[in-house]
Image (cartoon, rainbow, N blue to C red):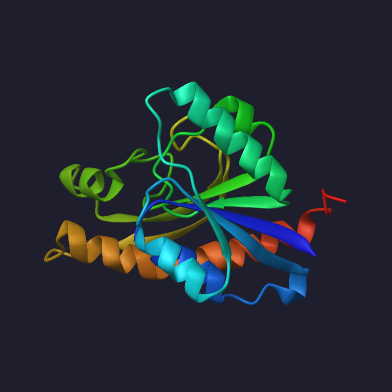
Length: 189
């Protein structure tokens, strides 16, 4: 079986879509969740699905945190790591070692970073969307794998637009995981 490890920081709605998905057609399963926020709702979601979870709170010394995260990911032997609302920039040591994808609430390369929905609205964009991309050491700069567009409506608020993006994002991340895993060889023994 191919092994999926999820990285998440918050409420876990995107992670939940992945937890609920059936990856049997690509012979894969979610084996673990890694979270950087003690008490995050995503930890409860993982527990409810009997998915092993680990918490690595951010440390004052980022180099030590990076090393702890890299060691844990390596110990879990993932074929694919999925960043599902993990609000940390990963160092090159991790992004070059593991196959990692991320979901971002904009049509990259437009509006990278943590405030993509707000930035799209502030720029007067008429559409935005969601992007699934490979993670590299930059901020949302990895190669785009898949995108879906969302029209920005005249009465949209940042919250309403983000909710509509999240609906698309959940389906796109699951479909993209299946697509990526179908092409990957199992990397662990």
